[in-house]
Image 1: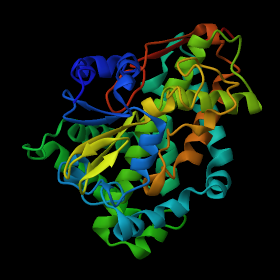
Image 2: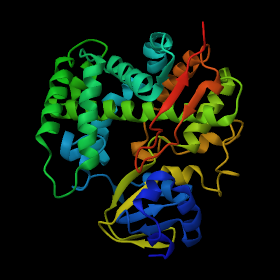
Image 3: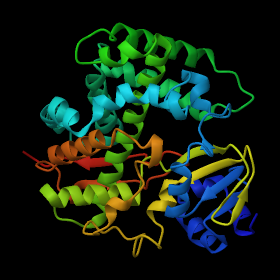
Image 4: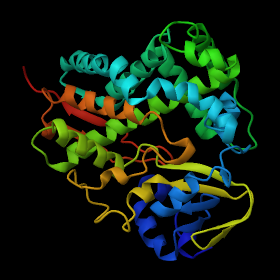
Length: 375
């Protein structure tokens, strides 16, 4: 355990982890962090090695709080069981499925929701626009019949429980009730065409509910964060207008790289091993930092600089890699593009203000504010 690893607090990591990452890289690709109670990856290579080896670094561990709240799912299993959970849902989010079933509709929805806010003098976009938009999109993608506002409220309750739950805690009654309400919504929609009827044919009720919940939560949390982070980068970049076409695509990829909405993912070592020259023991907690990987100076030149023209920005690990790679990447790109396209006509970049992204696991600005143009 290095001296550098003990010199950081949770507050520092939540605020801006990169000064610590830069200092600690001199101790290697993997360092022990007392504040986290585990090993932290600092390089693109170490993160990639761990994420691609689910036999050696598993998510299937009783310390994994999400499974304690929503049950066993693709997020908390590996190997054949993981593939059984994941495959029916992954088929719903291929590039062609997303484009054909959601593309034009998402564009229209984004434009409509921007127009709804347009009459106000100012708006706080993260909570008033980006979160509700992400929820509406995934509710439609899964064919759920409940209002998106209901789903978003249930998500907030359950996500708060997952974030606060400690190993010695019992799941709260409030979270149990919220999950039962969500369960009823999912099961009621399971036989509807063009929705969960596919997964419902191969998964039992418990697995269907748990995995649909994982998809919902990932789509809401990370898409809200991804859009908010992209708009934050717009506000900071000094551009005259929101980019279009290929320039917008490159801008979005660089935003994904510089500030991934999901900053870290967790793994647990299944047997003694060595990673990047560091011995890891069975049961050790490993925090895979996607943020650190995305700013690894061995991979990205001038990694802290936001450069939309960066030729290698798609080397980022924002959507992870390996068996648990995010199959929602196509949907995330669609949603961020749709929202920025919708904002372009009415939002001069100079009218945007944003707090800095913060968070230990999920990172996003607390506020993204806009002053609408006249007209």
